[in-house]
Length: 220
Image (cartoon, rainbow, N blue to C red):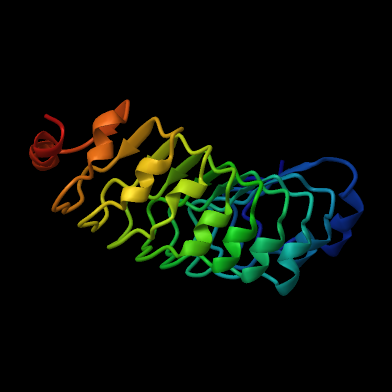
């Protein structure tokens, strides 16, 4: 555990620790760039590097092929490298509380990803490559600046939780209704002009007072 130690970098000698522990906690330090030696820790499965000052990554970041969980919450990231798509075993990704305006298309290569947490950013769009993450079960995109959502949600056959609370959405794609596994849909605080009929069958639908009026129009 190397958390809360005011670290700004790591010594290259750390590569010798690769086989000792699959989990490394570097949270609550003062890293501004991703320590280069981390890319040498090929056996690492879980990396906690939240609550730092990260703005950039090294080019070889994608070499962490064994990584299953990556926590980048509470940093200063404005962009993610395309090499993140090379983390082929990644299952959980935390991006909450950064300054991201978009997610790279390469994210769609993460076919093993189960949870994506990207709330509290400045995301204004997500592209169709998003639907390459076919094992997703939970998506949290609340508190961003999304104005539209792409069509094609039916490919996410295991998704059961979708949160787009507090964005700038005026409509919801009808294809979200193709996700038979969807149990929870959070739509509050979006300037929606209408609701598609499929919302009537969502077990947990979180909407605000204005949206309840729209719901009444389609769920009689």
